[in-house]
Length: 584
Image 1 (cartoon, rainbow, N blue to C red):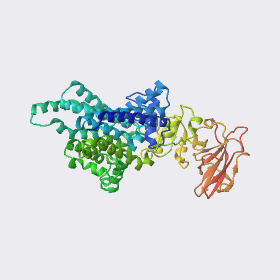
Image 2: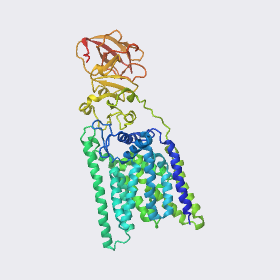
Image 3: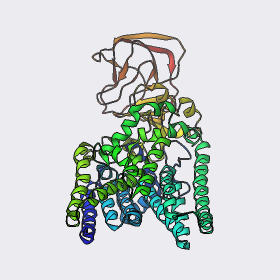
Image 4: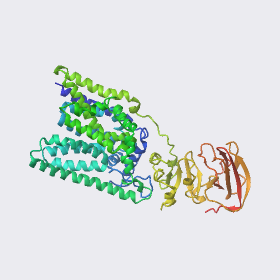
């Protein structure tokens, strides 16, 4: 007989130790893994804590006005916002702490589910394996919605099964609410747990010969499932309506992302994709080389065949349905970690069943210890907590005002810079954004800065004039007065008046052209051979050659205004005759 009190004490000690281990890491910046998703989530929490947006209209100011891009129902973000406002914590700490709280809450329904089908000993063993995987160490304190959705999903499984066994109003109402919330937060998590539940129901119901009893069960189930699906569909429609109303976000509606979510047949035919997903499970959650064995448990172990089959079906079918998501994002495995923990503890129980009563406790603890420690050792480079420091220089925050917008030209989904500078902007994801979309923005005059690669002259010049003002930041505008005293600025406008050649410069970075002797307002037309850039001064981001250069005012204590060109080839400076830029 396994000592249950000892196991309970160990479980509580592990949970407390887990918190003690994680708390010192909560103040880390959100860039150690999947920073794009972590900062996106945290940005919504931050705006909520500042009084902007609501549960139905969470603000995410990364794709222009109206500054919202709803995906999941923002309950997790709301919980983090409460921590920010009540305890005056930073956004990073609050989002990590909220995730850790939701992760810990998941242990309650997981314990109840496993206890119901496998017994109290297995329940404690399952939460030990669930808590101490390298996967959980990494993601339990990440700024993600995953464990919030999982808590409601596991609660839905338990309450639904309780209602099926023995109808109670509390279980019907509770299953309806928790299932609806899970579906609105993350429908992929809900589907994984519905599959798990569907394969459990025949075991719960026992025999179907009692048709009256099972008819009542079916009616009760419909009373739960219908509002759950209705709530999920309503939130999806609501989010799609908002995203579809803006040309900058209509590519993010659920219908537009179908191929992204589900993947292609060709992906499923590539064995390397399956091995990639299997490899993550087989080292981040379970001891290596055990996944295939555990998936065969429904065949090998008769006593727990039903729940083992349900867990196996949930894992395999969910991955097969949302194949591309599981290839691209390893954190999607959160929805499958309860099932994997259940399969693991079934295997442990099977091993212990062959051992004499006097040795069961020792064997149980030994096998659970191995199941925990092997993944931790095998994946030590994965779960090792990041000590990274924020690499962003906060230039945008220091150079701009809160009411000025930013074109964030990263060409990928990553709002990290916008989040940490607390600035609104247009994130230039190459999958859905074009210069044409920018040019049609109704609030284009509010975009005063560009942050990103230097070779996007189309984005830099979207307002007509620009000047590098930082190591990664370019000021953009329409009139000279937008810039202040800088010395020279650049223009994408084509000045077609007569011009006179002044100087030809080889682009070695060692030659310089000075504007000191030319009056304010003088315009230079530049032409070039080769691929090259202007560089105003060390530490300032280079800008593309080929634009016009306009002499402007500068601070009296500023050094002489010169530019060099780099990248090879030559640049010809030609002064535009009888023309000065109209200062406004």
